[in-house]
Length: 71
Image 1 (spheres, helix red, strand yellow):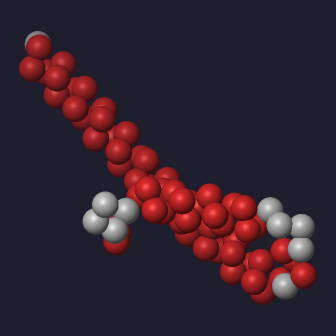
Image 2: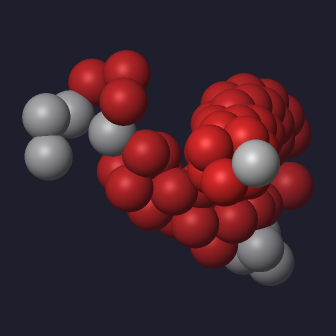
Protein backbone atom coordinates (compact mmCIF):
# COMPACT_ATOMS: atom_id res chain seq x y z
CA UNK A 1 0.00 0.00 0.00
CA UNK A 2 1.25 3.44 -0.88
CA UNK A 3 -0.05 5.10 2.26
CA UNK A 4 -1.04 8.72 2.42
CA UNK A 5 -4.31 10.12 1.16
CA UNK A 6 -5.40 6.98 -0.70
CA UNK A 7 -4.63 4.43 2.03
CA UNK A 8 -8.24 3.52 2.78
CA UNK A 9 -7.35 0.23 4.50
CA UNK A 10 -5.35 2.21 7.02
CA UNK A 11 -8.16 4.75 7.34
CA UNK A 12 -10.67 1.96 8.05
CA UNK A 13 -8.31 0.51 10.67
CA UNK A 14 -7.98 3.96 12.25
CA UNK A 15 -11.78 4.27 12.32
CA UNK A 16 -12.08 0.91 14.11
CA UNK A 17 -9.43 1.95 16.64
CA UNK A 18 -11.30 5.19 17.32
CA UNK A 19 -14.55 3.26 17.84
CA UNK A 20 -12.81 1.03 20.41
CA UNK A 21 -11.32 4.06 22.15
CA UNK A 22 -14.71 5.79 22.23
CA UNK A 23 -16.33 2.74 23.83
CA UNK A 24 -14.04 2.79 26.87
CA UNK A 25 -16.05 3.23 30.09
CA UNK A 26 -13.56 5.77 31.49
CA UNK A 27 -13.61 7.90 28.33
CA UNK A 28 -15.47 10.85 29.81
CA UNK A 29 -13.06 11.12 32.73
CA UNK A 30 -11.23 13.43 30.32
CA UNK A 31 -13.97 15.33 28.41
CA UNK A 32 -11.51 17.20 26.18
CA UNK A 33 -9.85 13.97 25.05
CA UNK A 34 -13.28 12.38 24.51
CA UNK A 35 -14.42 15.28 22.34
CA UNK A 36 -11.17 15.16 20.38
CA UNK A 37 -11.62 11.43 19.73
CA UNK A 38 -15.21 12.06 18.63
CA UNK A 39 -14.12 14.77 16.21
CA UNK A 40 -11.37 12.57 14.79
CA UNK A 41 -13.81 9.68 14.34
CA UNK A 42 -16.29 11.95 12.56
CA UNK A 43 -13.59 13.25 10.22
CA UNK A 44 -12.44 9.73 9.33
CA UNK A 45 -16.06 8.66 8.90
CA UNK A 46 -16.65 11.52 6.44
CA UNK A 47 -13.57 10.57 4.42
CA UNK A 48 -14.62 6.92 4.28
CA UNK A 49 -18.17 7.85 3.31
CA UNK A 50 -16.92 10.03 0.47
CA UNK A 51 -14.64 7.24 -0.73
CA UNK A 52 -17.51 4.73 -0.63
CA UNK A 53 -19.82 7.07 -2.60
CA UNK A 54 -17.15 7.70 -5.24
CA UNK A 55 -16.39 3.99 -5.51
CA UNK A 56 -20.12 3.23 -5.95
CA UNK A 57 -20.46 5.93 -8.62
CA UNK A 58 -17.52 4.44 -10.52
CA UNK A 59 -19.05 0.97 -10.33
CA UNK A 60 -22.38 2.34 -11.58
CA UNK A 61 -20.64 4.13 -14.45
CA UNK A 62 -18.84 0.92 -15.43
CA UNK A 63 -22.18 -0.95 -15.53
CA UNK A 64 -23.77 1.79 -17.64
CA UNK A 65 -20.79 1.76 -20.00
CA UNK A 66 -21.07 -2.01 -20.41
CA UNK A 67 -24.82 -1.70 -21.11
CA UNK A 68 -24.12 1.00 -23.69
CA UNK A 69 -21.56 -1.20 -25.42
CA UNK A 70 -24.09 -4.04 -25.60
CA UNK A 71 -26.78 -1.80 -27.07
